[in-house]
Amino acid sequence: MLPFVWSDDCLRHEPQAEIWIGTSTPATEVPARALAIRDALLGAGAQEVPAVPHDDSALHAVHEPSLVEFLRTAWEEWSAADLPSDRVVPYVFARAELTSGREPAAPTAVWARPGLFAYDTMTLIGPGTWEAARAAVDVALTAVDLVSDGERVAYACCRPPGHHVTRSLYGGSCYLNNSAVAAAALLEPLGGPVAVVDIDAHHGNGTQEIFLNRGDVLTASVHVDPGAGWFPHFLGFAGESDGANLNLPLSPGTGDDSWLEAVREAATFASPARALVVALGVDAAAGDPESPLEVSAAGYREAGRILGELGLPTVVVQEGGYDLATIGSLVVETLTGVESSA
Ligand SMILES: [Zn+2]
Image (cartoon, rainbow, N blue to C red; front, side, top):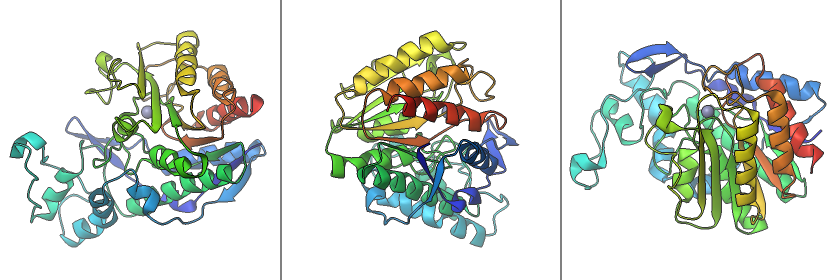
């Protein structure tokens, strides 16, 4: 089976909780997710490749340096300030309209700083968050290296996920956009355009916004309709396209047939690309607690087959998936599908 990239540092982020609609709820984006996937991969005979450290240049190709610097120092500053919360959580948000478009002042209070970079309250930063998020980028970049060096497909077994992070804002349990970093890094060795096909249950809003109006990276996302009340709520609708983006929102309850039809449409959209990033969330599966889509394991295998059939150098990057009992087998099913048509 194909090589997968791993770093123990991805386990260091333990959010414990999310502040969701004003309430502290147990975190679902937990280290056990990655361990479950790794166990399933090793059981299936996949070859583990340790992540290699990469410098920040690939990171700065998709993120504002100020976001990267904030994430790097946020926990240290917060913990030194002796605040009542044991995690970095915003309480006030520097919306552009607040300052009529002027650059907001850099706040003196440590507890106001997250409001410059966070767009929700559920994406908490604690000890190890930066190390894990940065390691996830190294995992994705090492998978890019494998493909650049001739592997047809490589899988980045990373967390925390990344597809909700924009150029300068983090949220949606994501801190750094691993899929976007991988796409930007593939541009250099393989040439453009590169395509990102996001089959996570939720819209890949961060990836869309990072590459909007650039033209060198095509982005397609198959996800539950935000108009039905699902994250990221404010975007992810059909028709946000500038020609380089395709959104395929689906109704809650959508199962294999319509979901796979959308995956086929996304694959067709991606077909002019010279390399492919699959943003693989397995939370569209029936039984996942975080989405109302009803995709089966066979559906994920078929999605993998459809995307593998494009015949492109392919980096598969882990995004969501929250049912610990099935997350590993769903990833193995998808990768088996990719390999079957590679
Ligand atoms: Zn998701």
